[in-house]
Length: 222
Ligand code: IPE
Ligand code: MG
Image 1 (cartoon, rainbow, N blue to C red):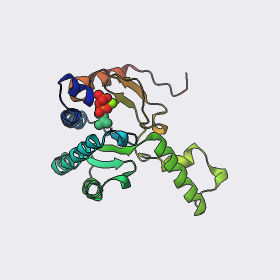
Image 2: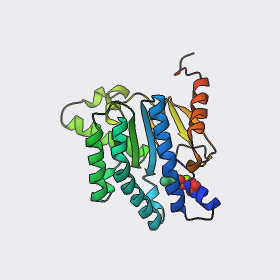
Image 3: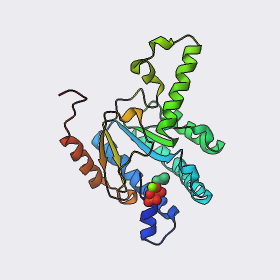
Image 4: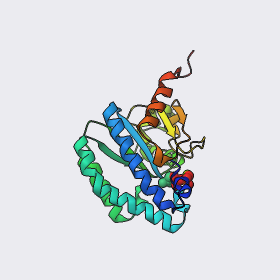
């Protein structure tokens, strides 16, 4: 979800104004996914690199997350959405961390959309974390180093229990992955939109899905 800052700048407003506007696009995207019967949606909300932004902007984002959690969880629960946060969550303030845990616990049995929110997430962090977990499993005698292959380490990555990622969408005009899911995107289709995130709406999502439907997926075969 990229482009909040530029959207605000175009309107001569502070960046936090753009982040607030971006929340509406989050809501509409979640609703569109529920409506269309999409099984999984993973949103990149805050990367491990975003801590390097000015303190005031990081603070404003945290405040938005907290308020959104308080406001939206019950409604999402009503839709049957299962919420999960992925990333290094221990870095967040205890109050926020606790609320995230509560949202996950409350919605864990829901069977509609699996909504994953990546917070303090980085694709390289995910890989390093999997390496650590694999090592611990070896130390416990549950896995042997000689047996390591793609299949045996796959369960240690975030989202391993969900189907492979079909479609990656980046908004805001840049053509890069910026340390989002790396392992998981190996065979995903990539779609780039120039629309700034606060303007991303149902029609934009429909265009991305149409683009996806045109792709021929060969997975290395002919
Ligand atoms: C939102 O867009 C992404 C977040 C980190 C919340 P940006 O804040 O990166 O907006 P631009 O790229 O400066 O326009
Ligand atoms: Mg950006």
